[in-house]
Image (cartoon, rainbow, N blue to C red; front, side, top):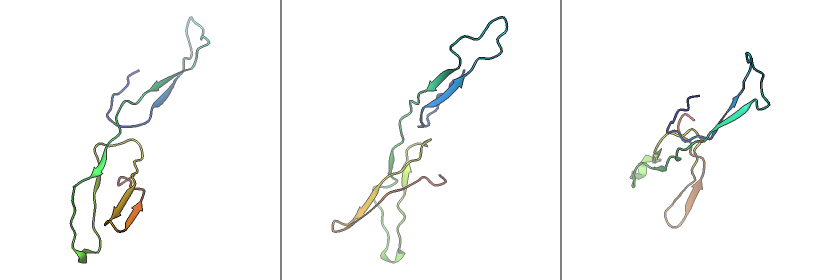
Length: 99
């Protein structure tokens, strides 16, 4: 069985192995067997794409970009907070576009 060493952070993967139709032999008691492929890839880092942003008051909105350092095979979420020292706004649920 070939195991592919990828760089995608994902959960462990499980495969069931089953023997069948032996010729000149009989099936033993240990059938089926389970193979667990243990993921060894680090999760990606989530970060702002820039250390500073600027927008004019008349713009109405500001686009702040958050990036992942690498693709992930898992749903990625991050909490965020915005404030000016006197008040703040908190939120959750950032998801990669297309997910």
